[in-house]
Image 1 (cartoon, rainbow, N blue to C red):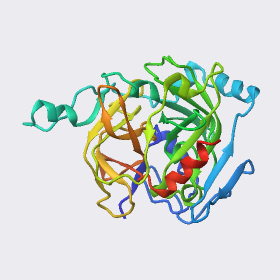
Image 2: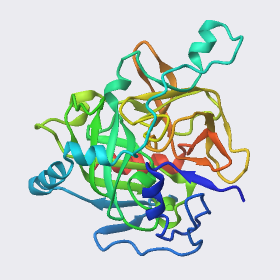
Image 3: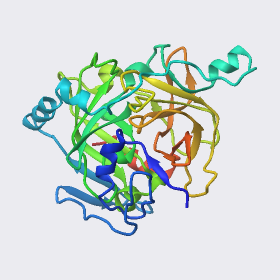
Image 4: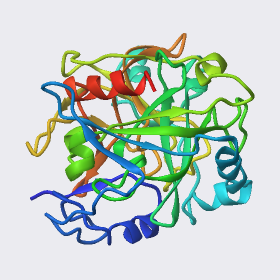
Length: 336
């Protein structure tokens, strides 16, 4: 079986997490996860609840009050945020990797990993996530999404919950992050949600998480940075732009990076996910994939998030298909 490589930042840190068994896990280059073993849900977590005919949504309440929020904000000092980024990196890659011989307009539309410099809404709605899992500090990526509560971000499930294991702690979202700057503030989590199949067995088909955030400065996230559209059941195979904050070499997590191009089905047949040529590394997990993206405005429609790479193909990123399970997750989370 071809092994998959989750995209949490830092090989040494991931190795620590790999000691936590998860149901249905595959072997990765970081170590063996025992298939079929699972941790019970923590006492603070709610077991997956199923809508009629649905797969259920697992949810977790975190930092709901002012004291809890202050604890999380105080935890993430600049030094601790910097320490969550892998060491020994070579810096960011800023070139566009078009195919030789392509016309200029086609070359600009394709990239396997370049710094985003065109501005627009995506620079505000995409941000870095800082979290603690298994006693270790990690970084991920996420995006603000339009929602009824005006407080919702979408990310990868493994950036919220360790499969059937523990929920993340100290979860905070920094929209518009850029070289340590937090131009739109910092938003702590109040309620976390993952799809039932992810919570029960770390099913890569449903590596999706959504987090309802606390206000920052008395304002909703959506009021501060806006939110991208989101769609479910979209046609497969549509070209996409993927964004995130990769933090392992040759990137350093300090800039917004993007990939763009066609997507395709999983050639290994192990998941219903879709793949895109993309060199982004750990730390980009949970970053949004947008269809119909307009570079002039920085707006698009989120149809997936960065999830994993196969260990024998580090040049292809995979993201879960947003179907009925993702729709159910969003319906619950946007009302939280």
